[in-house]
Image (cartoon, rainbow, N blue to C red; front, side, top):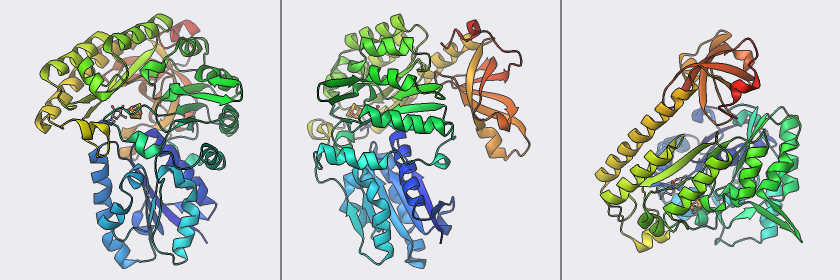
Length: 473
Ligand code: 5AD
Ligand code: SF4
């Protein structure tokens, strides 16, 4: 008998991938997906702890389920992922009708745990006991059996997929909860990654995005044999059918020259580098324990520009970190003006209990000031993105078509010809009119308009010569 599963995912790409793998596993137990939580036999939340806001959202969603569980006590309600690892029993205290709390390192157990609960077991919690819980080989084995099962329906399109290459993080930036909820940094064996990518390609996947909290820290040792991230890119580049290889998120200090050479030399590898700087002030970087100075970041940035002149570099910023003055913030503004990132993700500092930052420093920048700095930095970045996007007017770019644009989906457009959306190799969003069946194709699109976030274009019917792609490649 088929059972219905409703799953809601918040947070980063790693969480999206985790949800895909959980769903693939549950399908083996006869589950199918539903978009309606009321219809579901099992409701799962895959959660994020990186900021307070993400947690608040999940606790209020859980609050809304109280009556549903009351009406139908057979419904299984589970909380998975980073918040499960961080809050553990607190989740049962705040929402006593939750049946299941499972950390990111135990997700492969979800099907068994659900079966046990359906058979009448008490609420279950499976989390890591400490950061070093589980031996290296145990964790590797659990991922070996776990990562290769995929579920194209859970992905934005079947032509794009995430592939995990590094789990956990060892960097311990003082604001960040990730090292304590996702455990120590571990690189997956290259053979596993290559065979997973090969499998995806054979199923028609054209683009893979390699994932790691610090993806470019990838390094795998097997006896004397060391595989660096650049070596892995070379191996993946050989796979027939794969057309694009992206990777996020990079750690500035691990942006080595062999990696830049691989990005430059391998045509399938996107010249798109997300390398968060977090702040433009050395004083803040020191407090954040990011492990580099602005001078070092600047040196890395100019190396990228020198080796790969067409690279699109993007960043993350935290505004209002403990003790951030107007002067510190001005240095961040100045750095953005100087380096002109393709785009930036900007976050207001959110204190995370248990981190070094929360222990060592007061969260002393008022919310009002955080908001103002956030808006100011966003305005500056948007103006830069819009200005820099004008260079694409009159140019042709290669776009992997992802499907109907947000506007077409919202309006529920039915016909075959409609507004589509896709991305360039450098992760620029392009909107154009096309045919639904072009989804999954890589098309030449001539650009006639651009704002900060989107390029607007039309399909070029005569095939563009390679020189027209020069801007993106
Ligand atoms: N508060 C605000 N932003 C944070 N990030 C990580 N931890 C916090 C926090 N405590 C941001 C960083 C990181 C991105 C994924 O989230 O900018 O790069
Ligand atoms: Fe968090 Fe820093 Fe690790 Fe990124 S590198 S996950 S910000 S600790």
